[in-house]
Image: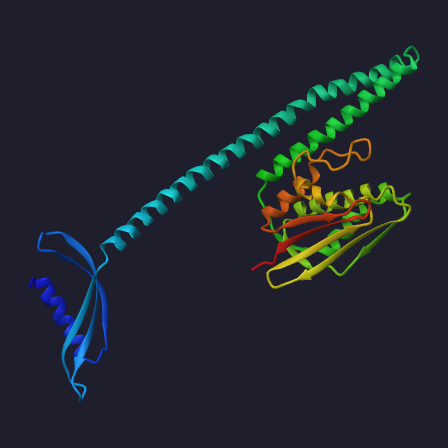
Length: 319
């Protein structure tokens, strides 16, 4: 018997004599042909009637195939982890390049847009008396188009900045922030009949400026899509507050949307209503989703045609 195996069995026998009922271990043994194999060994004591240990029995099982399979799985996992890391790095680089391009393109578009707007103003001020009615209407169309383009550029720049901006989280009094944001809508809604219903709102852990942008976008949508209502109703509430997250809901009685189109709500440049119905660039909700996801939360929207809409987002509670 090889010396290492004799030592192994002596150690097992000593443990059994000390009172252990069984011993299970894995070891490597060499066959007569010199091949090394993995073995699973279970050793049990042999006792006589008075409990005295007079020997032991062992059952050995060749587990070489299992060990080979485990090694292969480990290698596959390592390879998979490496590919995931490489792919993640490629996606991150691609996103950074795309954001940089969006920022650069949007920034560079400002100059020609300002030039177009400037020349439109010159034509209107210097040649208004000589232009035909149709000509003046064309200038109005150009002016409105440049305004929409300017808003689109602003939204693109905001979308790009949100992806790069560092989160500076702090405790935010949501009730106070909601009332502050509503103050921004006073001028826009002073001639509207809007009933704002604000529930008891908690303090949350978030980036104050980005959370403000979330509320501005969601409130702006609620105001816009209730503009056809003689009496609009917009509710802001904390629908639930569990141990792990705070859930905020914003509901309105506006025109709503087809629920089958809900999957498009947060896509960039996605619009569920035509420009002739409601203005917009289709980036606002994409910005909102990006901010909420960066906070580790979730956002969803639900609605029915002519039955209003509700947007719900969650923010993790500070650990």
